[in-house]
Amino acid sequence: MMKFIIGKKLDMTQVFREDGTVVPVTRIQAGPCTVTKVNTEEKDGVKSVQIGFGIQKLFRLTKPEKGHLKGISIAGNQNVTVRNLHNFKNDNDLKRGDVFTISIFEKGEKVQVTGNSKGRGFQGVVKRHGFHGSPASHGHKDQLRMPGSIGAGGVQHVFKDTRMAGHMGDVQITVKNLEIVEIHPENNEIWVKGAVPGARNGVLYISTDAGQIVPQLVEETVSETKNEENILEDKKESAITEEKESASAEASADKEESK
Image 1 (tube, rainbow, N blue to C red):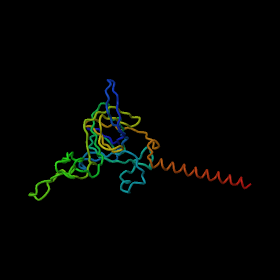
Image 2: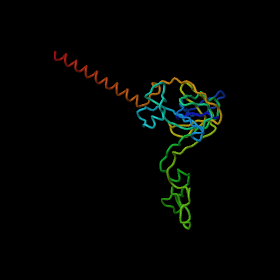
Image 3: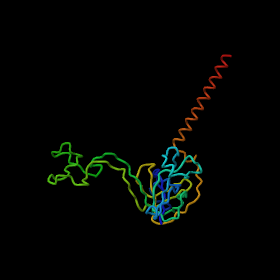
């Protein structure tokens, strides 16, 4: 059996332990996660589950996505559902609709974290592969960060995997044996020792090699997890009401002046 959960990277901070040592940690907001699909060996060829994390407005989904997530809601609100779906191999007794939080983990456990590294765009060989470059003097002109030779001419082609300039970053990376330093169930946060791949708000997949997931009831209010779009809508509504109030006040003032 294994334990797993989906989260997003927040930032890094440090924790002072009782013996005075300073431990760098990464704050990860993980869960609650909802089981959206259960795969079986007889039907799908593999025993796994698909879980979702985060909030997604239902009207943004396509019809196939709506059918796949039918009946999956958050805090009883039928207008929102989960997002960031991912499959995990599963030996736990989970059913579609089960919800679990970071309480399945314990302080001191070792976990592995998978995420996508930061995208760096198109980079040269010095930054991408750590080439030292050519000397700045002794007859070299405009060759400081050049790659140099890419192979002999006799073979008539460039060998595969030759280190050259190209796209850097945005690849999946897994960091293993990260210690759980602290768990904050009230904020759905888990703090792991060291750094994890990806930028802030990047999606992370956290798992262990052993353990059991026990689903539980989670009371999640949508107001606490409002996204930026809802906040902007509230601001627009408040601005419209303020404009109406100011317009009515001006109209009443004009009437009094006319009298």
